[in-house]
Image (tube, rainbow, N blue to C red):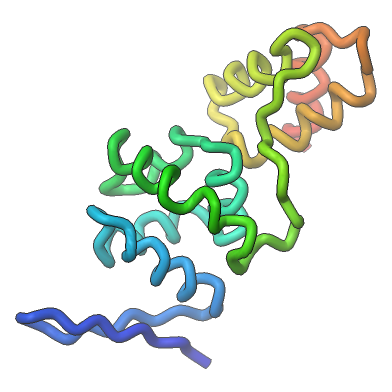
Length: 157
């Protein structure tokens, strides 16, 4: 089974195939953003799954979007601005995300830990739930060192 999206241009008729309906819906939504053509939309979808894209939009994670080919800082900002409100209703939101992934907790330890893990090469989409879980386990006694150590142990599995 293959889902096809037909794009008719002045000089060509193009067919794009998708294995999941969520990917096709995201393709349609992404190409509706000014500056995002089919090639950039496919680049985003090859970099991020629909569920990761939902999490990235809800977290306003510009860095994850700019990893996709053809997406620079300005375009990432435009995508975040235009699609943030629609992300929770889109296919791929299996986790039921409705709150931002980055919240200030214990004096910004969560934000600092996420920034440090991103510097080590971990994607925010993967690291945020782990950091939040570690912070909840420590409660008010959490320190950045403890959160980073335990998050790295969990992410290394």
